[in-house]
Length: 131
Image (cartoon, rainbow, N blue to C red; front, side):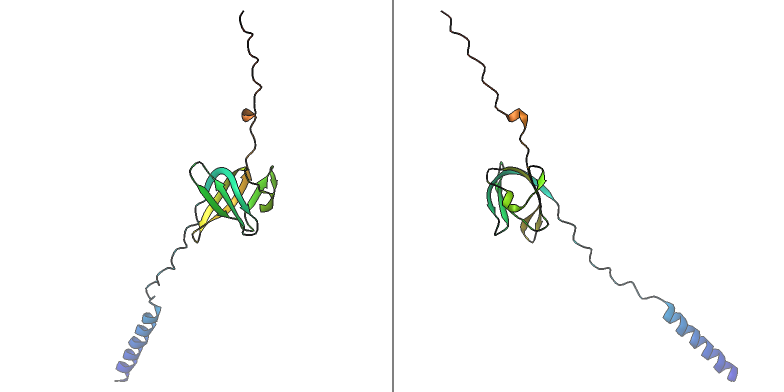
């Protein structure tokens, strides 16, 4: 009878060890992080600059876009780093922005360089009138 009790105790102990060794089903993984907001590019002319409200309105061929300017927004005027106060109305710019919490937040605003092709050409002299 003692042998039976020893064998039963050994089987019970072995069963408990295996029961603890099995792993519980994996917990569902955390939700994947939302994908980074896509950066969009617009080209246009500055209509308004609000250095206090940190916004810039840029008129494109289709619409006027209001962009929020943050401390991390990169601004370049004349090829050099600048601040929102250096932007002026009627300045031609290229802006990169992303949507955050329903707002268009400027990532980068750069003044477009004037091209030589757009420079005014002198008018050709008129031919003398025939007599």
